[in-house]
Structure formats: C-alpha cells, structure tokens
Image (tube, rainbow, N blue to C red):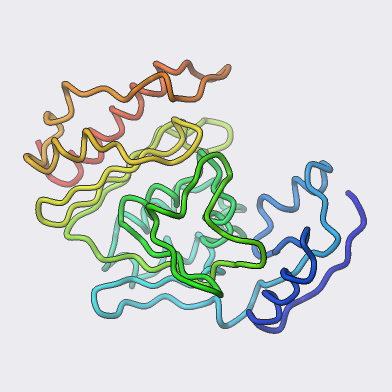
Length: 266
C-alpha cells in the first residue's frame, strides 16, 4: 500500500472541499472496494477522506411516494429495514444477497453506486426503479448516471449524499450469483408502474443496462412468456473463464423471466 494522508471529515461540505483540493483523493465509507485495491497497489491516493458516520449521509424514510436512503447506509441495514421492506420489498431482498455477512455489514449503498462495478446489485435497482442519485452538488437521474464499466456521471469533487427511489406498484429482483464472490453473473431487476415496466440487467455486460425490448413486451402483458421469444444481444456481453457471452445473455433472459414470475406474471 502506498502512503497517504487520512482525514476524517466532519461534514459533507468538508469532504467535498477536500475532494476539490486534492484531485486524487478517495472517499472511505465501507471500504469494501477501496481498501483491497489500495492494499494491492491498484489504487493510489494522496488523501483518504473518511465519511463514515456522517449524519448527513444517514437515514431511511418514505415521503411523497419516494423512498430515500442515505449514502452511508449499510447493505445489512437496507435488507433489515422495515421501511424498505414495506415500500420496496425487492430492494431489501437485493441488499440481503450482496456478498457475504462481512461485506453486508461494512459496504454501503452510496459506495456501491459510486464504484459502479459491472456485477454489482444496486445499479440494477437504481436503473429499474428510475432512481435519483442526489449528490452534494446536484441531482442525477439513473438513466444519465451509469456510463459504462466503473464509469458514472459524478464529477471531480462530487459525492453521493442519498438515493431516492420512486415506490413502484411492483418490483422483483433475481440473480445468478457467482458461487465464490456472490457477484451477479447475471441479475435482473423488474419494476412496474401501470403499463410502464423497466427491466435492468447487471452482471452480464460491461455495465448495467436496460433491456428495452423486454420492457416493451412486458408493458403489453406482464408475464414471463412475454419475453420467451426475445434474446439479449450476446455480442455486448462479458466473456471469461466463468461463462461465454451467449451463456450470460441467456442467464439475463432467465433471470428476467424469474423476476417477472415473482411479480405474479405467469
């Protein structure tokens, strides 16, 4: 690990100011990605800014039909929250599937969305639920936020403060986890509001994406059979020792069908 200066921020403003002052500074909340990459010398920073415990980044509440979750909220707290379970049960279910108990007790929703790992779970929920990522500077719609492999719309000096999810009529998440890491080899989050259906796929490609063909079909009839004749474009999928492009494309379709089945569609 390279040497660095550690600073525990006293407020979101202070953390933002420090980010602006030090171009290569990194934020530390759960540390589930930052610490391992720094230990392996895959990441280097002059300053590590600790934002864990800031009250401005805490809290879970429902107001005006929207579920708001503070960026520093741990996965385990999302999974166990009675508020989340009542408003969006699928989001609580998703959080309970992330990694292992150690990861769920340290990792945070803001850290996951800021990192935007292509196999992370939360990006699919944010995209399918049409969430708004609220930062210390502005609000970013999910459709504009995710920009590919580990890439987001966050600017230098910008940090996530909270995530706001519109409460859907129905939602469900299904994933095929890698047996060792728990990351999604393919995961599908399906959300319905009337005839508006959004389907977000994670794990299968280089970044989370909406499967718009499935959305159109499910908007006409919310049933697993509606996507039977559709196929995810395999040319854009990931391929490695764990699975071919075609395998992941098929997994994405299967997970979508399972998620729709959970919504009550036959």
